Length: 195
View (cartoon, rainbow, N blue to C red):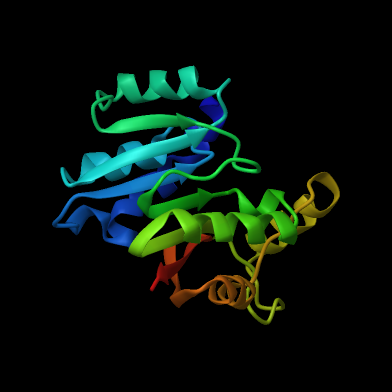
């Protein structure tokens, strides 16, 4: 878990500003699905007193996640909801974050995760997918995106996505205003809004 925490540090630091969480002026909840060390929730909550967080994580991982949250002094504002994102419904939230989740799984599972996000979001809530994206025309993709895609194919059931692929999947479920927001370096956020 420490490796994933360190790998996510720069993206987690950039998330509040990129997504506007640092300027939310009413209470909102970020749900980090498969959030491990809670680094994204911790950074979001530290950026704004109006933000609270939930990390949805496997029951066996919950105590480890709670240690990270306690170390950050945020046990009163970030909770851990135990569950399996393949099988269990997600808790209600205003933002649902999937960071480095989609590239590990096939399209059918990701379509199910998008539906679960839609179902748990409050009206006006946002799904946030953080990934290294291929370019829509593929040939102008960054070396990092192309390399990651090649690595994913033989070792996981997933792949890297193009923005237009994710936009179509979001819109099929009912999300509106899909957009790409650069997070840091080769990482981007694909964001959709629940009407």
